[in-house]
Image 1 (cartoon, helix red, strand yellow):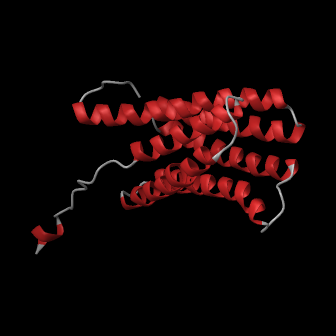
Image 2: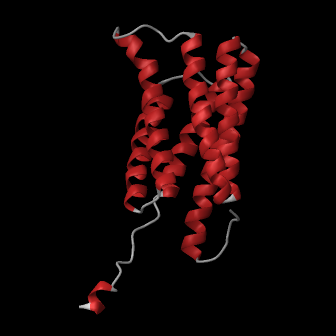
Image 3: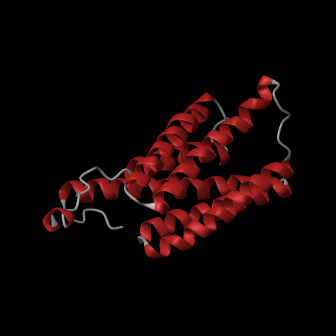
Length: 191
C-alpha cells in the first residue's frame, strides 16, 4: 500500500501559454496599428478581439488552471475577458442596448486595467525578462490610453498605439521563443 501512495502523476500536457501570448500579442498589435492611426476600427479588429484575443486567451487561462498556474489563469482569463468586454463596449451602443461610453468612463476602464496589470507586472519579477517587458509595456500602454482618454489628447493616443505595437510584438516574440525553445530542447531565442 505504501508504494501506491508514493506514485505521482506526471503532467504531460502541452504548455498553453504560447497560444495565449499569441492571442494577446497579435490582437494587441492589430488594435494598436489602429490606435497609431494606420487604419480605422473595423470588423477585423473586433473579430480578432472576440475569437483570438478573447476566446482563445480565456481557454488558455482554463488550461493554465489545470496546470496549477495561478498567474497564468488570472492573466489569460482576465485579458481574454478584457477583449470581449472591449468589443462589447464598441458594439452594444450600435444595438441600442446602452449609450456610447464617455471619455471619463473609458479613462476609468483603462486605468483600472492599468492598475491590474501593474500588480501582474510585479509578479513577473519571479518570471522571465521577456514577460517583464510584456507586462511593463502593457502597464504603460493602459495608463497612456487612460490618460489620452481623460485629456482628449490625440497625440498621446497615437503614441500609446506605438507602445502597444511594441508590447504586442514582445508578447508574440515570447510565445515564439517558448515554442521554439521547447521544440528544439535548447535556447533558440532568449527569454
